Length: 415
Image (tube, rainbow, N blue to C red; front, side, top):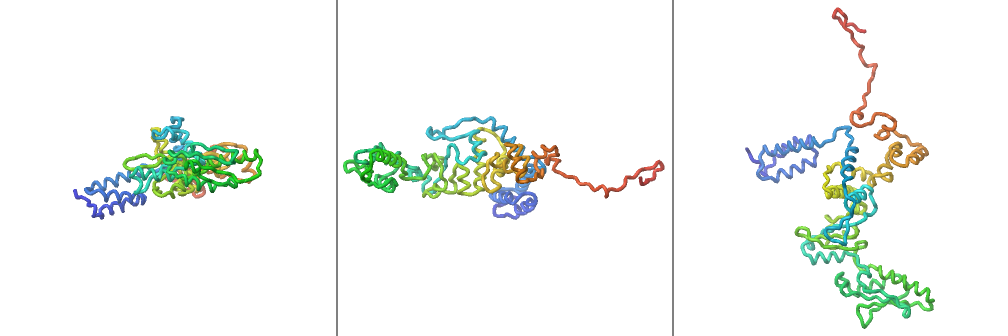
């Protein structure tokens, strides 16, 4: 049998040209790449691969009138009842939790604004991904460090009208923060008229002294307490909302896993690979990367949950759910405040929840229900437009020919 060489693409091109009448362009392109990369491919093997692809493609097509929504709902809903209802610790790190199973699935389809356990997986660029110390540098740039994370104590001194901060040298080194950095942050705080100074006897003690005169003791106490709270929560460095960053080795590269999420800010950090970095916050992905990225994130999150539970659900059912949630250009929940509540049919909306409210609102607006969907046709007792019910047969009786009768003599006579 003649071999098809990688350099000689004529035969493959001819086969794919014929197959393009059936297969979509994306599959044709993928076949072209794969077939041309196999060095010892025979003509018979190439033809067999394309024939099998066509067979599988045609088998995967949906028949006209098939109730794909109902099938998808059943295919996802039935195995979902077998999921566990627990929150799991993340990858052996006890301090970092991640919501899995049914609670996570509900979060995704409900399109919650923020996940209960927001987590980012941050991949690093070529320079930083193979060296642990460089990965740790990026982690320090990302992890949000507040003054309370690096302070041994923060006390109020009524006699000198000041707040005394005792820094922890071990934590300063661990977080990669200097005393000068802390002083600069404190000087920018909006807590009234004050001055910041480092204790000459102890380089890790900082004094924040207030300069207002003639202030009564009660007002001073309140002012110092509020100032202490603001000082404790002052952000020294890092990305907002990223509470913790853990460095993990996956394969031959180092990856950062975060407690907290801020995709927009993290993508701007030096050393981060923006093409692979992701978050489990769907709304953040929509805001930063667009609706198509959000759709892919919904598919990935749902499939990850199902596969993690050992459940086998065809990805096309999940893709349909993601399509319904995102086709308007924004992420909507599957519920009365989203997909179901925005259906065109009044009766379909009323059949789901808060029936009277939907009917009254529709009556006030003078809405018309065209009875094109399933729920509304069931309500009024008509044939449902799925399966054979999707076909409408129109007949014009006046165009029919008159019936012919056969007489006993074998001659045809018109009736």
